[in-house]
Structures are given as structure tokens and as C-alpha cells.
Length: 575
Image 1 (cartoon, rainbow, N blue to C red):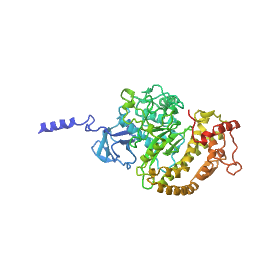
Image 2 (cartoon, rainbow, N blue to C red):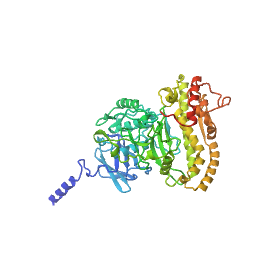
Image 3 (tube, helix red, strand yellow):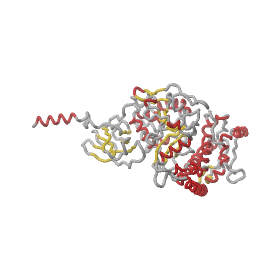
């Protein structure tokens, strides 16, 4: 009998891992568990994120060293693939080994063992598990209620928010407490990617690229592959020094590279919702870049939403929803626009070629702008669009753009309130691409987009007639819907309002109707040397205009008049 018991004990011990748990306590094929801090410490709470491409996370189970399991209080899993959920547990009270499991509807999908002193970092390769973790991290970083105006003065406050940033101080060095994070538009996705690589000990890469021309997309030099973070903890100061070099190197040309080009930082994706994860970039043909953050499902009452965030030259960050006014798409010889993903570094820190990428696609290159927008709207609204709901969502998106512009204009006012000197204006097309105070406080690119957005809203009734199939209408129904939307438009634009801060520091309210009536004024409203009232189209001699004391120099006015046609036609000049 003793021999039998000993034999059972030997067999049982053989199926246990070296730390006492069964050897099947490993990351799943499609589900992974991640921890912060990455080195588990006595007295420090543990944050857990479960990420899955198999299905929504329904449970996170913690089993203590005595074998007692308990469900941790997770929220209902929402959103799209990759699905994720987070929870925080108190400091582990016992020095023994704990088992954490992530469950989907099919049962336990991943398991990790943690204990005091455990280092939870995974192999430093950009595999699907890390890509899914990156997507989940991005989504949580910029998540919020759909009706919330989500904006920040810079990326810094976002990264310092422990509730948003799962990786906050995850290296255990208080590294986020004073970390500067002020990327602008083109730097923004690179900063996010390199920050994630820093925190997780991953490699990353970037290239020096030119800006292309009117007839040729930008091209790039050989990739600089950085392995600074692998197998070591790197201080915030060292990361900051590297990120400064990175942001000095990249610019808007990096995102506009040709879709078929292989020597690029980004590669194009197919228009499939399950492929366009958070963290995907959208590079428009004019140089602006957005980072996708979340898909929101269509309901019976509300159209589906695709959210993205972008950074502005003044370093402000704002969440935007997909529509023609924010995602500009055009086919042109000088750019490769569309949805793109970072080209991953695979084994031996080698960049994957186009042929190795499972989702590489030239689909977007084959589409006209109308076809492209129609396909994205179909992804957002698989049940079809309700015309009135779609109009209301378009109006909401315009109001968001106006609200964000108000903050940018006020940043310029703050510069002058602090004693800033008049700002030099670049020549010609350089007004869209320069450095210094003009880049920080002028709004030519934003106002170009705003003018396009106004046109989209004003043309919406005609859009219903031109594309009835998008709204599941026949021609006669589309005509009736168009008339009804025209009536709805006349009512809602008087009801929806925004505020801007005048030169005297007092708010002034404008209805959308008033903004649309001033549309032509925005063709000349981007110069920060003009007072806020001029930039919002106030008429001289009115009460609204009265506090204005600052005007752009006459020579700059002449420069603006010379290029006003670009704004009137809502068409940026080719590079």
C-alpha cells in the first residue's frame, strides 16, 4: 500500500510545475494575462488585464496557495476583438504561489502563476498576444462614455492617470510621475508604440522618410531597429532621450508612404472590422494621422461609431468619431492613404515583409472615395443606416470639431496673454507644415478640415438622394427622407451651440447655424495673430467683436488672400 501511495505521489508531482501548480498553467493560444507591476512585490496592489481574440472575457479567477478559488469582480466585457477586462487585487498577503485564470464562455482560456518577486514579462517578440495587448491598452487609455467630449491638453495627463493607463508605473520606478509626453500629430502613434515597447521590454523601429511630391508618395530609408528595452529596465530619462530622437526623425511623410511599398513603418489593412483593432492608424493623404481606439455597436436608436484620437501641433489630444469631416480620403499620386498597422518586428528583431503579413491588403487602393466611405459606414452599421440618425450623428461630429477648435484658438490667446510676440507666418504651402509658434497656435489644417466638415453636413440631404442604398431606401423614399432631413437640419442647427473665449476672457455662444453662416470667414480664420473674435468670424462693430485688439500684420493678410482659394475649394495644395 505504501508503495502505491508513493507511486501516486511521484506521478502527481510529475504533472505539477516547478512552483507547485499543474504544468498546464500557461498563457492560452488566443487569450493572455498581463500584470502591473510587472514584478510582483509585497505590499503593492496587482492590476490584471485579460485579453482574448477567442471571445469576451467573462471571468478572472484567483486561486490562493491553499487552493481556494474566488472570482474577481470584473465588469461586463464590451467592445470588439480583441476583448479585454481588467481588475485590481489587494497586495498578495501570502508569499506562496497564486494562480490567475481568464475565462471566456468556453471556460478557462489562459493561466498564469504569480508570487512575490515573480517577473511577468513575456518573450520580447511582437506576436499576436502582444499586438492584442497593445490594442486593449490603447482602447482603455482613451475610453469614455460615447457622449463625452474626451480631450486632454497633452498625452502626459493620460499616461499619469492610473485608471486609464494599465502600464502606469508598471516598471516599479515611479517612472510616469514626471514623464513629459507632448507628441504632435505625426509623432503621436510612434510615441504610443515606443512607450508600450519600453514598458514591456520590446524592440521597436522607425525610419527617416522624405515627404514625397505631387506625383510620388514618400519613400523611406532603411529601418532603425532599437533593442534598448530588451532584457533590462530602462529609466524614464533614458526613454525620454530616445523618444526625443524618435520624434525629431518622424513626420507626416512616414504615414503617407505608398500602399505597395515594403520599406515602410506601416502597412495597409483590408476593410474588415475584425482586423482594424485599436492602435491601427488612419493616415490621410494630406499628412494627418489618427489612432483608432474603439468600435461602438449600432443599436436600434443610435448608429455605430468608430472612435479615434489625434494630437494637434499644440500637443492637445482629442477623441474623434469617424465621418468625412475627420477621416479625409482621396486617391492621389502623392500619397498612400488609409488604415494601416505598424509593421511588426518578428524573430531576431527582423521587420516582417509584406508577404509575411497575414492581413496585408491593397484593397483600399482600388476604391474611390465614395466607395471607401460607403464600406466603412457599412462596417459601422451592418443593419443599414437610418438617414435621420446618420444626419444627427454627423451634426454631433461637427459640434465636436468646433469644440476642439475652440480649445486650439484659446491656446493661441493664452500665448499672447503671457506676453508672446507676434508670430511669423510661413510662405505658401508651408503654412500647413512648419515648426515653432506658427505650428503650435495656427489652425490652417484644422480649419481646412472644418470647412470640409461643414460641406458634408450641408450636403447631407443630397447624399441621401445620391446613395439611397446606403440608407436602405428606394429613390422615392430617398427624396422624401431628404426633404425631412432638410427640415430637421434647419431646426437642429439653431439648437446646437458651442462657446469660445473672447479676448476679454469672457465666453461667447454661437449656434451651429451662426457658424455655418460665417463659413467664408473660416477661410481666413487660422492666423493666431488675429484676435479670437476675428478667428470666429465676428463682424466689426458688433458687441461680440468689441474686445478685439489684435490684428494680423497687413503683409500676412495679403499672404492669406493669395492662398484663400485652397480653403474656399477645401483642397490642400499638393506637396
